Image 1 (spheres, rainbow, N blue to C red):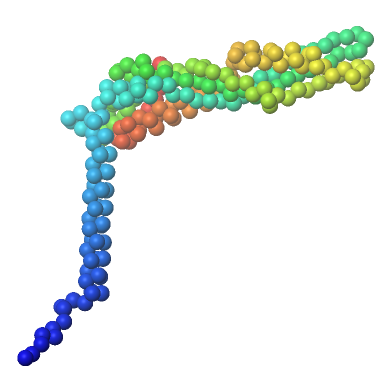
Image 2: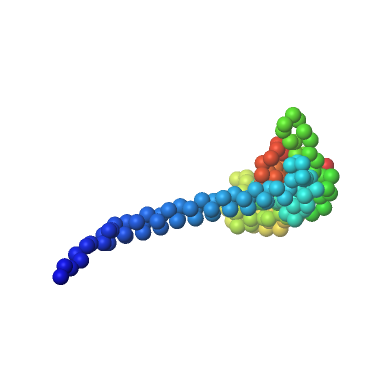
Length: 218
């Protein structure tokens, strides 16, 4: 009587190799599907801002900008208050206090009208023109911990005269001066330039960079 000594067609190591290859193929296929789905979601988001003629819908862009509400920018400057002391006997003295402040300006987009976004065409290029309110002052932060006090006095004033009373009076005046601070023209230009840039990047993100964005103020 003969025994069947036939071996399996594939060894155990070969079957394991086939299983690993199949798993790798499955993972690669899943990665392709995930990438395609992610791009589809992104394209759908951009498409929501388009009309049926594949033109950017300015009303939708304006509506999405209104949701952002306040666009803020900041600028760092300083306030200086000086107190003078005059005396025929002891001579004149000056006490100055300088304090850094941060001024925050904001542009309110919540009231942006639909006609605040306009689409023009220059050849094949879409020009997205956005007209927003000018930034206005929102807050002023005074950094009292970084104050610097300078005392200038003549030789006739005694060593014990420190000018503390004048310095305290100057420090008490700092918040008032900070609120009344008028920015230099260069500082105001920077605030407006930073605001334009923030809104420009925001519109580009909303429209998928489908055109050139130009931001103007009312």
